[in-house]
Length: 254
Length: 346
Ligand SMILES: Nc1ncnc2c1ncn2[C@@H]1O[C@H](COP(=O)(O)OP(=O)(O)OP(=O)(O)O)[C@@H](O)[C@H]1O
Ligand SMILES: [Mg+2]
Image (cartoon, rainbow over all chains, first blue to last red; front, top):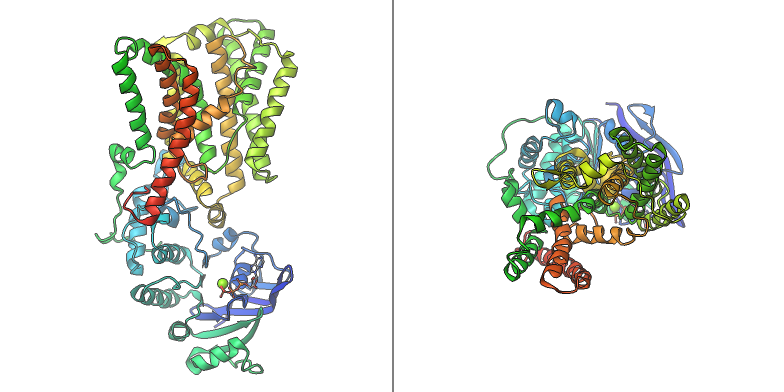
């Protein structure tokens, strides 16, 4: 299987913090890669740099084998790359259906649509389908997102990205606020999305979850990829060791 | 989206507030509508023979018409969490340019009036685009941008006229629009009503309106999903400017003269009305209906005080008080909703 999305030598500095320090990263189609690392290791920064949310100082990004440059997050969306950001980035005053379709509204057919009228009921129906498929705890698609629980918000953000991704799906700590059942549902969704042939990148601090869904695990430390493991061949201890720097010399074989 | 199956019953997909009545009930502005009703009832009871007459009601409607046109644009702007302080000055400079040109043309007919209308709208649009450009592209805060253009536009109007009002509105404009009536309703009120209804539909039913809320609610999120936020902001400030220009020609029709010195508080009155009507100064929230309710409160107070013989200066006191009370109550409702006291935020 060829590499779908790849970063080489990415560097990015914020003032005195070298958030990314010649970081490499790669993910194949039909595979779940877990990206792990301590707080501040640069995981979110890497995701932002890969998805048009952040300019890089140096380095190269390759999509389907050729160099690519996203100036805006929308550029990444256009080629099928979606992100669930750690901060979710929802519009709190809009409801979950409105959020899910924000920027991609379904319009009324014919002249009304051309005049800018939206088909709200179709969007609500589709949003409801998406939420129930996800097994999420969202019980209404017409309540403003700002009035939802943290976990419900997270479900909305995940459903939105899952619905629109068709090449790569990034999830930055998607289960942080979720209950046991919803977490399980998200992990199942990740597997389903992978089985549809997408590349999925999961950032998580939960090693059991990582080992459950990931095919490969890439470890980031101080802005640099320090190890790559096959999930089947590694253990929580080994991952923790790589994250903290206890096993320094070992670059995984996978 | 790949699925098209019907959603399960467990997820609510129709807003219970879809019906007009339900929607109005669930709005932030509903209690302010109650305030308006109470004010009308009190004046009605105190002075049933003069206050609740068709003549007085049309009079009130005529008085708010021009502000209503401005409030449409202002509602859009404030929902994006912006502000437009320049509307009064833009109104003035647009009416000055229109009056000067119509004066130069000399005719009293529709062709002169039409040129005046077009010029006023173009001048207003120009100022609006300038505001929008400075807000969206130059990233100067809207408060500063429009405070600046308020001053510049007014100054230009004064330079053009030497500070003296121009009495030049073609007769057709004054007779048909200014004093004209249709089925007893002032023409200017009908025009304003059309602007309000169209503005309301655009705000609440179209994608343009949805993006207006999205930008005010979370600009980062709007940008991430690919909304061209800068362009939308320019369009929204342009709309506000365009409507101020249009209000300029309506004002000429109504008063027969430019009102260079008479618009210094227009911006604040319109902003107060919009905010009283439940539009959040922090963005993301508001309704056209609320803004209209917010407009009528000062107008009804003014008229009522005159009729019952209270000094109309009290109106200014009352409006300021209601403004603060309205925002206070809104904050309380929101805080209560966040604490989960069962108050709907919808
Ligand atoms: N916009 C920014 N401005 C300044 N510094 C930043 C910015 N974004 C990230 N950083 C810094 O870059 C480093 C990496 O941050 P990043 O958010 O990528 O960490 P992370 O691995 O996602 O951590 P966490 O597990 O806590 O989410 C941190 O030291 C952080 O302070
Ligand atoms: Mg992070």
